[in-house]
Image 1 (tube, rainbow, N blue to C red):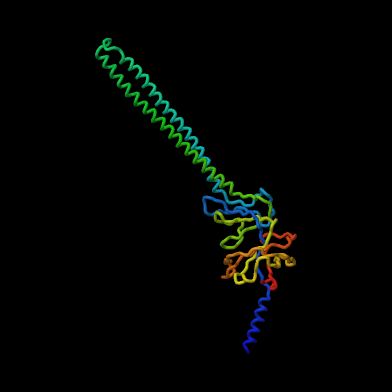
Image 2: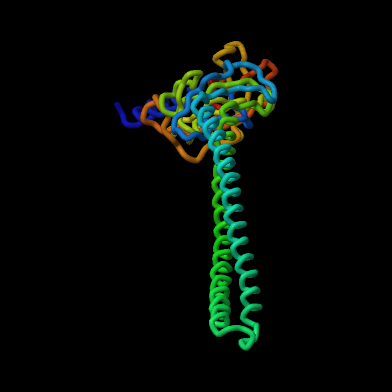
Amino acid sequence: MRPALCSLLLALIGLQAWAEPLLLSGEVAARDSQMFVAPETDEWMVQIAWMVEEGTRVEPGDAVVQYESASVAANLEQLEAGLRKAKAEGRRNDLIQDLALREAQHLYDVALLTLKKAKLDAGIPSELLSELQYEQYRLALTQAINDEVETRKALEVKKADVIAEKQRSQVEISGAQNELRRVQLMLDGMTQHSARAGTAMYVDHPWTRNKIRQGDSVERGFSVLEIPSTDDLHVRAWLNEVDIAKVYEAQQVSIGFDARPELKVSGVIERIGKQAEPKNHWGDSGYIDVDIRFDNKPSLGLLPGMSVLVEISAEESP
């Protein structure tokens, strides 16, 4: 076969392959949604005790997820008892410290009165007293001065001790109160409520790709439930990186729905991702996310998570 004929046949084969439409898998997605994540607890795993059934319509304020909270509630009861004990011990300690302070103040007051009397006695002229009595008064004055100094220092130390002891008790009480508030907030977070009206959608586990359901145990911070907004839906599709040259922004596409085979709508590519990432169970190829908007918003009750098949005709390829 002549080389020119071979080239012509290869070109025809290439044109035929190029003429086939490009198909992308995807799903209906919401641009805005409320995501519920497993709350922070003292354990690294938390169990879902109850979850609203997938597809249920919820209203603002409705409970949607309840986590196992028996251990947290038991801890809260212990902390409440500990706080009551800390307050009682604080009051008892305050009474003891106040009594000790009054005793120190009483000893100092007595020392002051004794010192005043000793000064008066020592001030009596020596010629009016015997030598022995005069020396006794002088000795008593010296002793009274020393007692006044010692009791005054003891009173100052006791005042400082009382202040320090009351501060220590207050620190213990404040610590118990803070821990109680922390655990109370943790317990409150075990029940999560919807902040918007919408349809509850289960979330895939990031490791197993199975939907997270009631009874599952998940790590703190894992997403467990989503309530997407249905006011602004679009399509999120995934493009094999080898086909990146076949798509461009503002390109017209046709969208079909697995759940509604009779429904076909048109759309426009509005964004093409910059980075290819592997998809679990899709092989070793990298896939680029592609956002597609509807030309006209379908009025047939589309829901986020519905699988779609995006078709890009050969005529639309660059």
